[in-house]
Length: 453
Image (tube, rainbow, N blue to C red; front, side, top):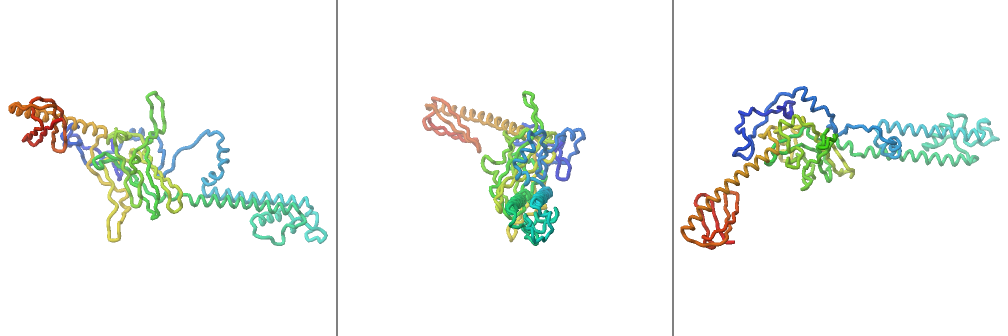
């Protein structure tokens, strides 16, 4: 059977059943046969094709792989929100757009100044004619009008070419063009500053482990992955959210659903999803009845077609901007039976973090069964233990009754507490042959205490 790949590209496999110390699920131990993961042969090509027929929804770098088609009024909606559209443009396109806006405004106002000079009759007289006062001095052709437009809008200062007070419309046009140039400058500076201050690049200093692991953690089967921040500036209110994306699912009614999202509990009920990201931390999801991985075993993991999407959100301490970093793990990027290596060591200077070990793992003894089977196994063992304890309790009760029959003691309804090692069982019985407040101790390693109700 197939398993999850290890860090060096190979896939762990279960040893043959005859190598397990316990083959049956119902045994005297609390967990089925645990073992250390071993290497396994690669998947067949047909199985690999079936598993990878759905494309990845979120790339490892956080890019969402989707395209919108046939959106009504698509361009109009983007134009209405033009500022966000400009901010979302790539740098090359933003610079090109504003450069084109400046050149276009200079060109258009150059045409207007040329028309004003033409209407005013500036071109009908020689330059420097003492009997004629032009609207714009030294205006000879369209080139000179374009240069005058550029000088006016950029406020670099006039030379011999300047507007004259003999043309009232020229004064208005100078003021209007200055305002238009100021608006373009303000918009460009706002867009560029927003692009520079965006925390999008800040996410590049956040690290996610290349692979996730499933193994026992504090006695529970758990999914684990690592997050680290290599900057010294802190992230405030940092928290993690995890989703499982089922690329395709069919409902009971036969409806086909694509990209079905399921929440994965990483501690948002008790607040452990909020992290203090100073040193690398391991995010742990306990696989229980509410987990999407409740039925996933080592063998079935190789055949699963899901994607674990991780969202890390927080507020930058330096700029107060909200940050979101994303990554995802496919089923073949989850290793069964591995823990992450320890990265933090203590020295005379404090704590040292070795990022060479960030993606390193080591195998740990882990059963290959799903959490559902393990819970059923533990419940069966607990039930068997309760049955045995009840039988022992009844045996002790019969023994006490026989002793009291010999004594001829009369009592009323009693409550009997039986202590067996670390477990306490309570029985309520009615008998007319026990004395009130009698306490009976059975010398077989178990204590029987009788008290009157």
